[in-house]
Length: 493
Image (cartoon, rainbow, N blue to C red):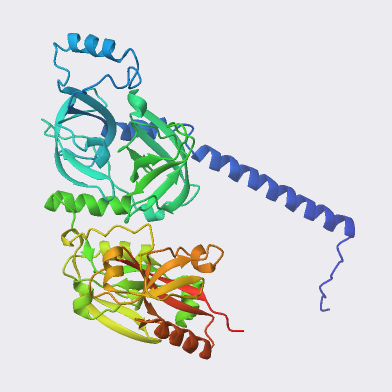
């Protein structure tokens, strides 16, 4: 007889027990996994600190400064006790009230090679006559300056030691994530070697420099920590502690470290050349805001708008004022800051392709980069405080009172003899023009990316923009020779 498999339904209470058993087992597995993860983490940062601390150094600088000619800092100037304190000081100085004296400063640094290269901040050693490096062991050596870069506040020093020195390596700062643990080491407030821990609070911070790329951290950084390293948990340097944001001079948990990916490029150039060699495009630029994009008919507010093309690589290549740089060497340009950093990181003499939007069409221009450090710096003329006198007939529009340039007005405003345009003689403080920064003494040289030399020219540009359905008009404004684009809203009603 053929047997037949029998199927039995599982009672409800048995199924419920099975699910409960499985849930209990899963909970147990999770608890064990968490316990293993906790045990895998170090109980202390001490092992890491012991590993990397021998490479961190204290830096003491000594500088000769001129003696003071008065009792500044002792009594207020003009005080009846001023003569008394001057006589007291002169007696103690042997009668020489201007005797030079030595001033000392403290900072931190770290060794990056066994043969004695040391990285610190430029402001730590700037102007120093003598630089002393104190190692974790207490040994002291005199250092010499290999090179400095004020733009990133980085300096490279060198000491001569009898034996190989302990050193640390740089990590990839681009891999640092907000929330990652970090360690700051240095010599805060001259108290000697110190360690503090925190997290990466923010990335890609800018303070005031052109090439800024700071890591923000809440690890305690104080005076004396400048130039010290910021480590990740692998013991790699991902930043150089440079500045703090503080109302009282002490740490409030907002510190800034120059990212290692910036520092390594600078250090490599200082080591090879004793100076930096950054690429130079040779344009003045500004960000493309949404109103500027609307005025130019751009699809989105990205790129870098060229406001001026002085003598240099860009002019030789044919780039023009009003071009919007959309990509540089195959990389899309998000804004001016991104472009400046990318150009600066490019090799001097490199031939790169620059794609621009010009009059609504995309064009690619090949540019051979120059060297930023060789670019001539120009002294801008002073910005006038008053409107020119005896100005010709004036017209008001767009919240501005305008008058055509004359030789007298050019001289008054410090403009070149060949400058053409309309001078701003008054700005309505309730207008959009005032809100966007236009002031008396500004010169409008272009409207709608075309030159204007008369009121009639400007009126024609406004009418053309309105006929084209544009919401705003793009003006090229020069102040003390420095150009920038401003988009003003048009009344299309």
